[in-house]
Image (cartoon, rainbow, N blue to C red; front, side):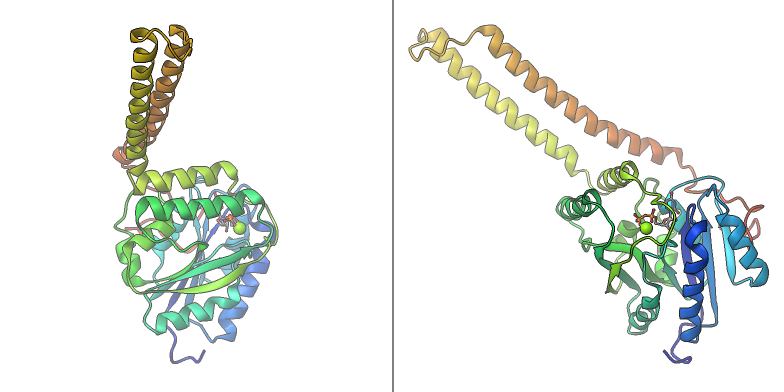
Length: 327
Ligand code: UDP
Ligand code: MG
């Protein structure tokens, strides 16, 4: 890429949680790509999501040498989605690239994202083709997730969509208006629309450190996505209730005629207790399931009504930011 067709400035937002082991390598390769492509007006915002290792110290030491490396320290672990939002909210660049700090997103593709932006895309989405080292749970879970998501929400989320993305300042501006909690950044950016294009990549094996998103968090993220974007699960259980009530009514009537009115000519020998218990179990199951779903919605409403900020920045621990930077 030549110097003249570059964006005026570029912000790279990297959420990091206990990444000290591999971060220097990631940072070096990122800087290398920027240098090779003559991108000199950049800022790299590392959002430290409450790491317990020395991730923050490492970044602070880079900031001392070069203020283009910035450390945004959250006051505790808020999760990747909030860390990303925090970084995006402070990104000043004409284009903003979000990328994982564990080396799984290939930094060498960065120029391709910019080329797509130059061609007129306001959102460029990195699509993961394979994920080396992901177990069956992640591989199949993510397949199921994208299928369900597209069916339930009516929105199109490209399978394999990752948080390796480029967004334009215009998109950032609109993104920051979305204040909902329990969010999934990818889903929100997709919801916003705008011209988009896709870049396909093979996810690499994590360089070092541990996966911060365990099975539990992934399941929580997936459920949150459905609950916050679609009320359809609520209707589904309504339909199920109608079907089961209908079926039990038919069975009940059949038994009433066969056994009570006609004196059991087919010799079903249904005892009243057997029937009653089957019906009760069915109905109790339904009630419990719908209650479970309802509680998801209620907890979503509850989180929303608290209107808590999505993240809290510890400015004393940050480097390159002042108290009044976020607005
Ligand atoms: N991450 C974060 N907060 C967390 C967990 C993860 O900021 O609570 C960061 C992590 O440091 C990495 C990115 O989010 O840069 C992706 O996390 P991870 O590699 O654990 O997830 P996966 O690769 O499975 O999506
Ligand atoms: Mg990873």
